[in-house]
Amino acid sequence: AYGYQSKTQKVSLKTDQTTQANFTLEEMKKGTLKGTVINKTTGEPVTGASVYVVEDAAVEPAMTNDKGEYMLEAYEGAYTIKVAAPGYYSDEFSVELKGDVTKETALKPFVGYPGEIAYDDGTAENANSYFAAGNGWAVKMTLADGK
Image (cartoon, rainbow, N blue to C red; front, side, top):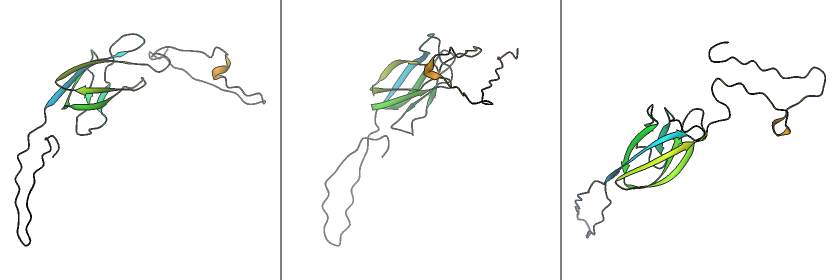
């Protein structure tokens, strides 16, 4: 059963008879994963990041608070932990959960920052151009404060 140690028992089966086997299962030990999620570029805490166990959907995902801190509880064992937040590339790490474990994670932000306007520098790595007459690109940008 989920959350309990497995157990086996030998039984004898005889023709035309019913055999009964009783099991008393012990609950598995739980561990706690605590940590902080920060912005890899600035070192600032990441608020609202989801932290979840890939292998066990029954473990409720944790969300980071305004200090980037999170805590989740799961049965002891080896897990893959995934961290995802809007505006950042997600990250995964492996953890052996036994007792209390602490892990800091740094998420790499997508290019650009809120309120920043960036222009193409003309280099070829991201160049898009149209040479035929009538072709072109237009971009409308509005800053967060509307100016």
